[in-house]
Structure formats: structure tokens, C-alpha cells
Image 1 (cartoon, rainbow, N blue to C red):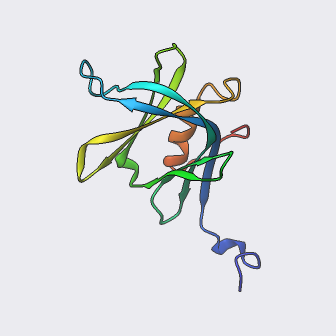
Image 2 (image 1 turned 90 degrees about the horizontal axis):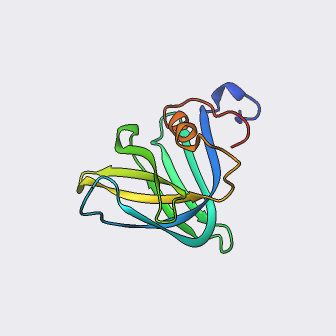
Length: 138
């Protein structure tokens, strides 16, 4: 019997897709936990997905080329989310991913392409990672 015929077998899945461009992260000697962030002109989609029994996944895809520029998974405890100001004073969103080989964590940064879309982007992504649905609009 397929998942369509028996919807009770469909694993719980939460997804959040946001139009975001990528940023470069440069080490900040004054504050190692907050890198210097510079926007890149690339525009894309950041998708955050959580399925029952599967590790949370962050995937960024370039909208112009379709190229996947980032695809990382890990336990909920391996991700930290925050937002910082870039050098132009605009908000950038940081995903810090902790891996065994990088105990300090690796930073990935994104800028929100449609600023009016969501002022609570970090909270929406956090809710998805925690396995909670996101309200319509993201």
C-alpha cells in the first residue's frame, strides 16, 4: 500500500523555504563567535527540512543556475542560529554547524532577499529544526 493510499505511514515532515542569498564569512579576531559577513550577489533558496527519523538538513540552491551550494545535515544540537549586521548595516543570518572535526563550528551566512517577508526568520528556522510547523508565509 502506498503512502497516498495510507497517509498514516507518511513520516512527519517540516520544511521552511526562504529566498536568501549567500554571504562570505571572514574570521573576526576581535570576536571569533561572530564572523565578519559580506553579501555575495547570488540569489537562492535556503530550505530547512526535518523528517521523522532523519537528521535536520540545510540546503541552499542558486536560483539562477539550480546549483546546490550547501547541503549539510546534523543533529539539532549541531546547529546554532543567529542574526548579525553585515558591513552595510543590513541583517545577515548565521548558521553555525558543529562537527566532530571542527569543534569550533563552521559558519554559513545568508541574507534575506525579501526583507518584508519575515522579520522572525531565525525563530521560524528554529521551530522547523525543533519539529514544529511554520506558519504560512515562509
